[in-house]
Length: 502
Image 1 (cartoon, helix red, strand yellow):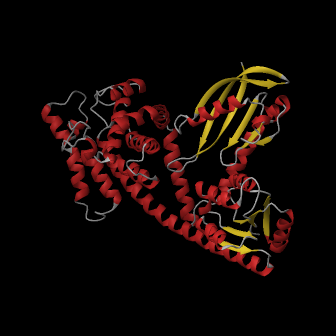
Image 2 (image 1 turned 90 degrees about the horizontal axis):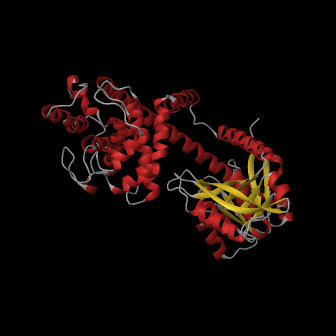
Image 3 (image 1 turned 180 degrees about the vertical axis):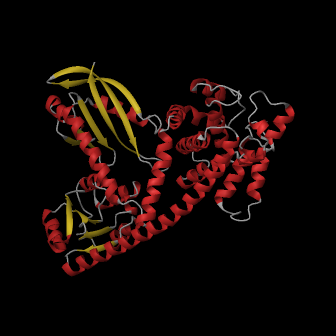
């Protein structure tokens, strides 16, 4: 038996919600919200809502505000909205459509019209989702084939070079980390998630030209002579030439990006690199980022001619210009992402990241080939259910103040221990109910300031403040962690916190 489609009805009138529920019958699972703020909260915690029936005039947050919030967090892309309102002025209707509403039904309700439009909307979106899955499957298969061939070629080069096979994985991982950090810091390069994926994939081919370098030079344990180094430097132009002479896919973004990386990943910001002596922004950003990733991994990995440097020493050498000059903005990115870079590449070296990237990809591929579909929302829901169970367990058993904050709704939820010992409600809204939170207004402002200063790479903040516990003010150390969406650029979506007595 198929699972019922889930419809959220947001209307401040209990009678209207009851009428709509009765009209729709037993064929749907119905959720109800009595105001816009509650509707947003429900959508944030329920990823499987199939349709929203939305009133306009509601307290706390009206229907237009809800639509604006859905646009901000991109829920409007996945959840169709039918406006149901007594307001039938053209200005209301036009504004609703401009904000992404799928349909508009005026009161008084006509049961046949409501039911037919609900069915039509659900059918339309179901077809769109099937089309998206089919397109995604085709794209995935194409990209999987590209990545497979790229990894085969790059690992052949590594085998000739006497390397462990981790270098390619390290370069792809480091390139992705640096690019995502760059996008969060500055939008001058106009990169999106697809660009980051493309550059990370193409980065695996950065040394493909070494296939034409004699093994005696590649694996020489000592310092290269000038003639040998001149030969080694030709791997950049050789790699570019290999790609330039491909009999197919010459104009594909992947080949063009790989060409730029192959030829120019040894160029330097001050023009002292090779092979063309490019300077500054004349060097494509893809090549700039891969160059930095390549240098970092070369420093922190053991080679036939050197021992590995530690992370701190490698960072110091790059930042001091001992490995050539880099884009100052990328040096900032390296500083911001340094800890994460070290952690993820260390995980790869121990086999953890290799398992995540390769084994998991292989498993997903097998599922795709067998099922001919992409993993569905049931997996997402099971995962969320497990995470919620874990979070509830820890919150119920923690003997300290814990809370979480939802930026979209202003909703703060306190742990059971906090409710009992701080004498605060389980839920409240900021800023309207700040005086009931147990926190001084000035301390709430300090928390907000601290959270505004966080970034995706540095989401944590620490503060000290007085909190009322069992009627007595006591000093507490408050640890905060800002939460960010995974889109590009990321959005601040809230925070979690814990206060421990000093």
